[in-house]
Structures are given as structure tokens and as C-alpha cells.
Amino acid sequence: MPLKSYLSISAGAFMLLAALPAFAATSWPSSDLLASGTADSCATAGAAAQENGSVSDTDLANCTLAVKLANYDQGRAEALNNRSVLHYARGEYDAALADNTAALKLDDRMAEAIVNRGSIFLVQHRPEAAAANFNRGPRVQSGTSGKGIFQPSLGA
Image (cartoon, rainbow, N blue to C red; front, side):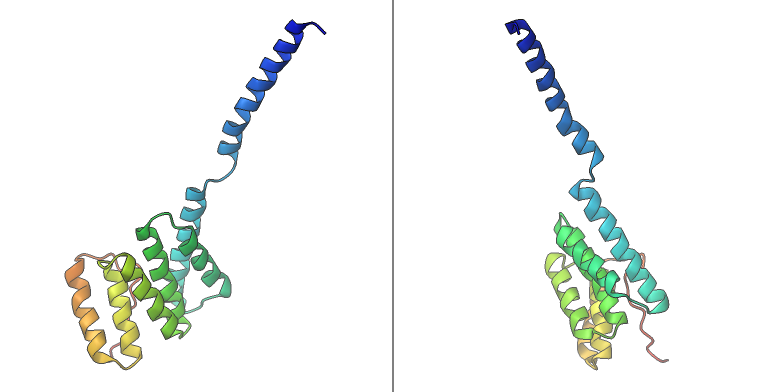
């Protein structure tokens, strides 16, 4: 085979191989997409837990994965806060408190985590700690959407 043929085949093979990574990058989900989808699933599970109190092991596993996949501290804090809602709904108050405390170490101004931690302290019969968190939460962030915030019955 003449040299010109080899060069043509080599150039063609090079162009094909150069195009493959671009194809692969567009056909496979990126870690950002996986993290976002997992975080959304975790948030949805947290909202459902507040609505009906049911939490599956799969919901907890999704939130744990969301914590691991989060690319930024804010995303990790949100996933931890949502997972704490699931633990709270299951009556796993120590695990919920651990998640809220971890979320606040990443973002000490997350009003949802502050108020949620107050709710945990309330069911643990720690009224002073609960009051401190309930008073701090609204001051940190006014106009909260209510997403991921426990709504304990205080019994009027």
C-alpha cells in the first residue's frame, strides 16, 4: 500500500477518534446532572415525608447519595437538611440532629436547618435549645419558602 494511502487512513482514524470524546460527553450524564437529579429526588422525598410521614429506605439512600454527589457546600447542606427531614419523620431524632448540625457547619445561615434543629430539640424535651433555634431561624433568613421546615404541633 502506498504511503499516501496510509496517511489518508491515519488522518481519517485520527478524526474519528477525536470526535468520539465529544460524542461520549453528550451521551452520558455528567456528574452535575446526576447530582442535581439526586438532590431533586431527595428534596421531593423530604416534602413527601412532611405530607404523609412515610419514608422508605430508598428515600434515605437517595439523600445519602445526594450528600456524596453534591459539588458545593450549599448543595451538600441542602441534601443533609432534607435527609434530616426523613430521619425526623421516621422518629430517628439523633440522626436528624446529626444531619442538621452537619448542614449548619457547611452553611450556618440556613434558616431551614436552624428551625428543623429546633423541632428536633423540642421532641427531645430540650425546650431551651429549641427556643434558641426557633428564635435564631427567622432572624437569619426572613421570607423563607417553608421548604424543608418541620411544622411541629406545639399544642396551643
